Length: 261
Image (cartoon, one colour):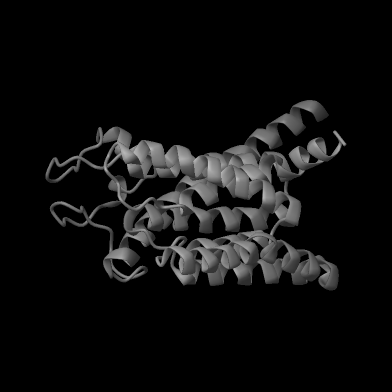
């Protein structure tokens, strides 16, 4: 009975996490699009981007509506981008993986908020090649809140400051030097701010690992987008994916590597 109960609650927790993720993915996707287009984020009902018709409740079911409508608007028949269900599915999976890794803890909640911010940053960088400061600020505030909740404020603050500057400061110095030599911007300031904010959540060794992973992901992304003649390559998505991989297995990889010596 105990085993079955434990299994039931485990799968129920994963189900709730997935459901929360796809709902949040739907909301954040809409919020980012409104923010980038200059529309109010919390005012006004969602509408079709083609015909402008206001969407009903049945049109706004995460994943379900897109599948039931076969990727087309109910009112004008225009195609609805697969970005919506894919982004909802991704964030749902992210929430489940974080819960599986960190269980029902404050750390899991903290990283869920971080991943939600990385999700927004990824969408913004892909759409308009920008990383809004508001997401960086919210990420810093989120980390400070959870530092206060730990009860070990001084140690956690030291941990966060070392993590924040471990990658962002060397990148800033390198970027300034290269800017002088090449006489052009070599790295976006938003990317450095992103490393600072996300770096607060992890040890310096994990941040270094994330930097290397992000560089590899960025190169792969660049090779793919080069075929589409994309002039400016957004690095924010690569950094976001790097930090997500880092939170799932970064510490273990660092310990494995250090154990070789």
